[in-house]
Length: 271
Image (tube, helix red, strand yellow):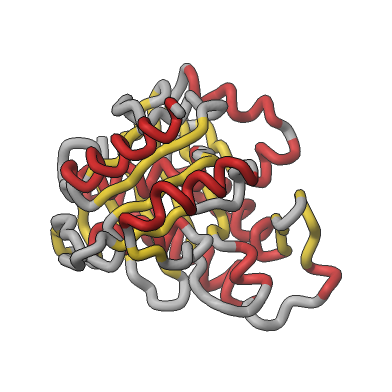
């Protein structure tokens, strides 16, 4: 289903959203154009305009597919139920909104196509650099038209970007004490459109995610796996977009790096 023609069409739609709905508001937002959704989570006028455009264009591209957008789901959680039994577009209209609202990179657009919970295709656009990543189930991963293979950083201590934002404080302390010493920790970009490419390009070796909502992770997880990396649940089970209540996932640039981190986390969990 993920043909070159479909990818070309999706890319054009994503670039249109970036150029018409997102970038005109970059570093020019007013206070009235930024709303709080939850503690440490905001939505802007650009998120809403982008999702409106993406929903319209993607619906016309594949009329048989529902559109599950981040902002539509925030307004009505029942939208997520469509992921369980039908073909769906999954849309993050502005990934990295906190960065965008602060007037800094990175931020991007994420689009995924899934059928009955299984991810078929994923597309990732960096709005500022124009970098375009995509992957199709069973057909590899690509950046700006060139096929890519995930590679480790090669550093003595693997480079780890571990999100602690949605962890309880006790769990954060465990990570700092028992996991951090084995890695060189780096800040997370707070943008999946940047974090997943880093795992493919040799910038980061591993990442740990606690909250794994489909619009944040479906495209990136497929992209990393199709590039030869390893992105699954800590217990080794595959990531599915219809299991949106599950938490926890590890992304790694190789299976060996995944196994090492998963083993350390498993020991931690048994304590």
